[in-house]
Image 1 (cartoon, helix red, strand yellow):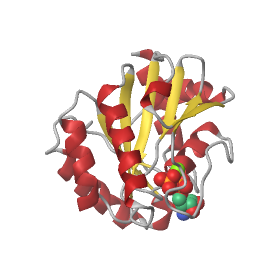
Image 2 (tube, rainbow, N blue to C red; image 1 turned 90 degrees about the vertical axis):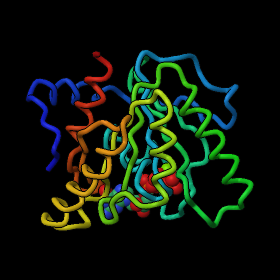
Image 3 (cartoon, rainbow, N blue to C red; image 1 turned 180 degrees about the vertical axis):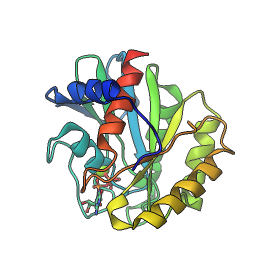
Image 4 (spheres, rainbow, N blue to C red; image 1 turned 180 degrees about the horizontal axis):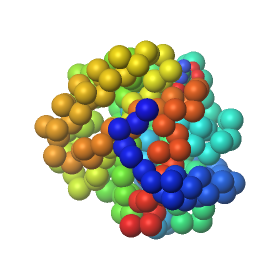
Length: 213
Ligand SMILES: Nc1nc2c(ncn2[C@@H]2O[C@H](COP(=O)(O)OP(=O)(O)OP(=O)(O)O)[C@@H](O)[C@H]2O)c(=O)[nH]1
Ligand SMILES: [Mg+2]
């Protein structure tokens, strides 16, 4: 279930885009290491452990192209994956992971923030939210930061397999209500499960449409 409707044609275009072999390009720890601007760049943001790397694996159909783990805070760099020469997805370190040392977390967060507000060609930031919990207080600073910049962002609910249909409806409704107060948020919300392949085709179509617009 996804409340974003795509035509058969859009879904097929998305499928074809992601049928390309995804390549890991580089991990960026400092802004001066960022690659040249791509025609289409999108990024995955969200709390540690929300499923950013897993979603990238599901989209690309590569089981372990982005490292996934049970250990929050595993992704520590801005990891660039190339879907094609012109389309890049950036897997970002998660925010809100308390167990890593404060200075480490502060370092990642500075990097993430500078990247988000200053990256030319960044078409959309997908903000991942655990569907079991919905948008939490710890997510709000990120949403507010994105509101104050020119970056367009969209909520993607993750791990939908862990809840039943009525709970899915409820979290979708609540999420849409919250984002209606955030001016830069895209009004549509994706509901996904990397484990059970829910909403993956739709997210591929969404990214493909961005690359065509
Ligand atoms: N059931 C279920 N588990 C998932 C899903 N997506 C991710 N997980 C699990 O959640 C945990 C964290 O997933 P990651 O993809 O590493 O999360 P991340 O957001 O990249 O984490 P950081 O890199 O630490 O920020 C792993 O144990 C995954 O197997 C999903 O759709 N369903
Ligand atoms: Mg990760």
